[in-house]
Image (tube, rainbow, N blue to C red; front, side):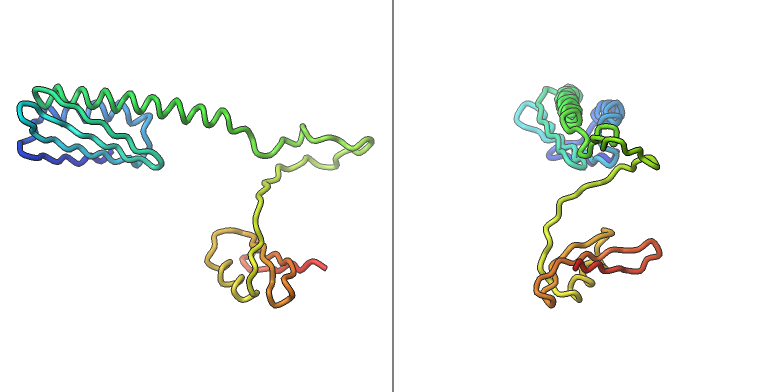
Length: 179
């Protein structure tokens, strides 16, 4: 994990970096892979204030702590970051529990009486899309720069008829025009 230290009005001691790096290596298992940490150390009257920000892919953790010396403040701020990390991990686990599968498995589908499946059923990925109104040339331009394999649109040149533009396995494009 990349850590950036900034000092305001004082010099950073090696013990501060030691405490923060040790705790961050322990938290790397829980934090996102490409997380970046920023530490700002500043002197305030009789105390040292440390502000830490850990920026991950989808979440940002922030903590501030003060203490009589840098090591004490660093330990306190790292305890607060660790607490936030544990709470975040619990939230992510709970979100994953709640979100069930979006597609039912084939075993759960109702069977037609007397019909035997000839081959094993495949899982289908369903996705709701809104067909935008555009000309065929505009759809080709939009589809060429898109990473998707299918584009559904309403063709303005054909009275807003529904069209499906798809990418074939060989890389060429196909256009489906329903009757």
